Length: 339
Image 1 (cartoon, helix red, strand yellow):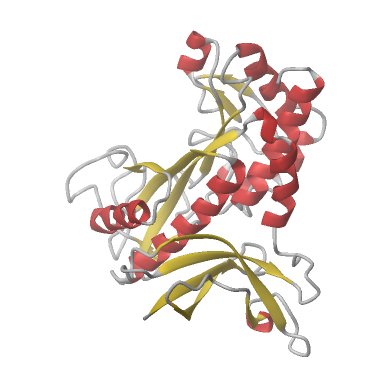
Image 2 (spheres, rainbow, N blue to C red):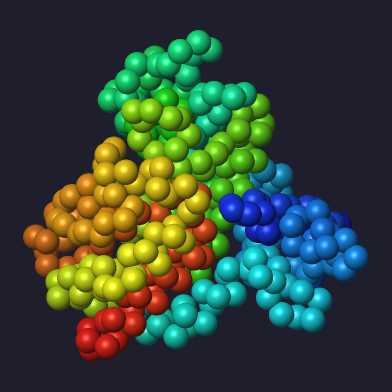
């Protein structure tokens, strides 16, 4: 007997990377081996030296094909065994290991928008739908579009063993969200990429595409983000660490460093309107969805918990946002002996 292994990797497309995948047939009981691909077709090599290497780093049951088939997440390497420049996971690994003792965990809220052809799902052929307001967490065919795809995607993620913690309709027709976590930095980023792949693959069967564009419809519509919830052991045990984390994210050039790595088009989404803070102004506050970083009201009441960085775009690389937050916050907490 044999089984199918779908090798999945992140390519080198700029400014926003894409997911790629291909299938390998393996003998029953065989572990997914190192494999290769044509990097000149994925913006990761030139034609005269196009071989690139896929190294499996995680595997999950394949809910699309079922049976013993699996999804295999891979890192991309050069043939000299050095990580490819597009391999942002390789940059996260040492930091995740360095600060593992602080027990950082993340929950990422992935917003996305379904498109049918050139228009968001639910937008009429001519003109625009009713203004946003009733769509968020709504019900009914006049306000909700794509639920059957969303439910199938949720089932597929659960069948793959992903740490999906919820779904909801968002503020624009055809716009939805799923949440991954709470998980460790590498786990949450790995699983978010796999959940994205499953989103695209599931929607494909319905003749619909999904986009992570941070501003999929111009005008008076909310953008699409990837709000990133974060805590360490010290933050889950005391409020001083919560405030220290918020302050660390606002120090010196940290706000700009983070924002410029939080997804292409961030300035079109972080305008100060539509529940965002201006991209070039850092702020934090309790229960404030107009701040860069929100402290949930229950966290202030309990004097412990987590914070929500509301700045990352829907198209953010989860390996990058988790690396930046771990580096900035855990370094500061370590210096303050809040670990």
